[in-house]
Amino acid sequence: MPSAPSKIYADDVSLLVVTLDTNPFFWATFPFPFAEFLSQVLAFLNSILLLGQLNQVIVIATGCNSCAYVYDSSSERNHGATTGTMPALYSNLLHNINEFLARDRQLDAIRKPGTVPSSLLSGSLSMALCYIQRAFRLGPMPPQPRILCLQGAADGPEQYVAIMNAIFSAQRSMVPIDSCYIGSNNSAFLQQASYITSGIYYKPPQLDGLYQYLSTVFATDLHSRAFLRLPKSVGVDFRASCFCHKRTIDMGFVCSVCLSIFCEHHDKCSTCGSVFGQAQPDASAANRKRKA
Image (spheres, rainbow, N blue to C red):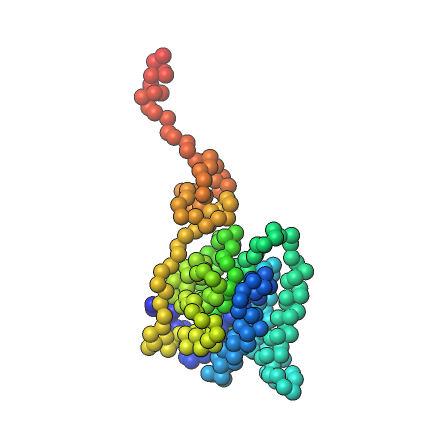
């Protein structure tokens, strides 16, 4: 898997934007506790900062209703220790995550009992790309940016268009999207994101050693990846979601004008308004009608 071009970036300086899945509905049904998951992620983020003095870490919390920045290592309030027993990385991040979860819970809508809503991955990817674009404008030699998605909840087919737009935007900006998926099944969205942007998709077989997987697979900068044998995805699920019912489909109908995808045949495209199934009139039939 080729690494993303890095000739326009500063050497050995990384900008890591982490999207952290905090969906409470997922973690309530998942056997691995969120507290243990978060402790291993915090240790990984701390190791990224220890690898280089100029490395920068951004954490975006991904809820089921909203997203928010919960940690920025470049902020002055995160440089010192806020308590006598806990570093600023731990105390500030935990405090901000708790506040975010309280705000996100207030936005809960009425849901069907027994269903687990998907996390707002499209929103967190968009926020990550916005932060990276802002970093690009700070100087001629910005740090090497990459996005790491720590995701557990299942894909939300209703976010297909927004997620694909974010993926192609990252590809155009030469920003790789790494994916660490801890859910039961694989994530088709994250598989496509890592494949298109030349990132790494990995599903840890054992979550007890999550820190080891994070540090050995995702801690390497873009320049070092060319010299390492990193795990490759066995296969990529390229299935799309229909625009009409937001369902993942194997076969469907595609509008020839705007390329919208539908699971059923429609007389008119709901996206661009093009009319389908308008056959051209038969010339011989028209001549016979004139003679009659």
